[in-house]
Amino acid sequence: MLIQLAEDLPAYFYDVFVTRFDFWLVFGVGAQLVFGSRFILQWWASERAGRSVMPLSFWFLSIVGGIMTLVYGFVRREPVIIIGQGLSTVIYVRNLVLIFRERRRARGAKVGVKA
Image (cartoon, rainbow, N blue to C red; front, side, top):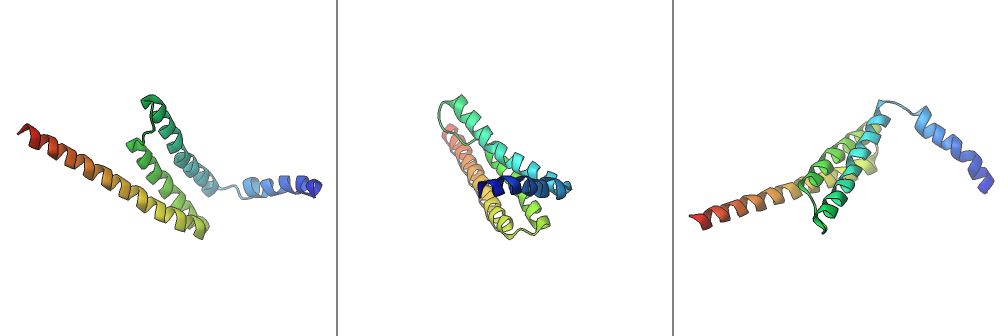
């Protein structure tokens, strides 16, 4: 069984990464890199702050990477990607709406205190 797997695995990877190589494969890999970079950014920001933080740019990278992955899913006709990234992107946008609403309220409260 292991010998057969060792023989079949190179053919599988050749089929996935060489035979099917096109613009959309590069685009999809790029989308995953953008999407994955948000975790590196969040880790870096947390290390700098000395506590767990979620920088605003995390949500922007989530949206950009999510939309790119969603486009890839539509082009490749992958329902799992379409459903997952479609819902996730709505959630990322909603988080930004909540963040900006909170910031607007905080600014309004500061202006009210100074008056």
